[in-house]
Image (cartoon, rainbow, N blue to C red; front, side, top):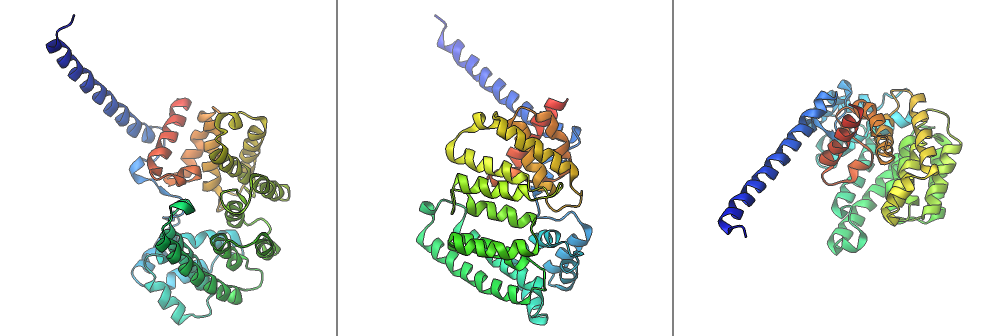
Length: 349
């Protein structure tokens, strides 16, 4: 029998070895990202939170210092591409949710600005959801629920003003209402009426479709059947390069979360077909399409789940420092996103 005085030092040595190996694996993972042409984990940000466009960054910095005019100029310039104009608002409404001094000044000096009213709507929606948190309804406190509905009602009122100010053909004031409708639990009939206003102005609005899919999933106001039907209808009428094919990947992900079908669903012929369709759609898309990063994230996730991680590496490179796809739903999104990138890099090596 081995003497205890021999076993204890051996255990200590094994523990130290395990800790050293773990640190070595972590160090290898951190350093393999730049080696594979990927930005370091420390530089990762959630998609849309920090704009890559220098003009957007300059306008955002100006807003942070209280100057709203560069933001007004930037947000009103979209060449009639409503999906792009909608996407441009994201970092500004994100800022206004916590610091709205510049926005209040903008609204005071330009009370008829449709862009200011839309940013105001979205900022209030964000503030409301931050109060509520993303937890299930059973885990939300009474105080959180009350605060959520109070602020969401303010957003609903401002959204009506945004609709009144919107120029002909601009769907974005209605798109801003989608999150209000979700939070207030609008009926299917009322929601479809809102949707009709949007698609009458822009039938393939990327941001609108992304938001509406949430309404139709089972965890909110719909079901798996309604969610997939919505995705299928959107894809059927969309031109190549619209990136609406990504809706199907998102629908499958929502389904997996609910029924834990996991690997069996990702191995199905239906998922493979949806993934290949999304890859072709991305290849046909304008590189400036506002949904490219989000689409790349969802497609990269699909490739990893279907044991094709090497194909995902170029998509991760294309995403740069932005975290997109299902990884944005994680609390430690940078870590899980980086793990997926490293898996793709190693598979491609």
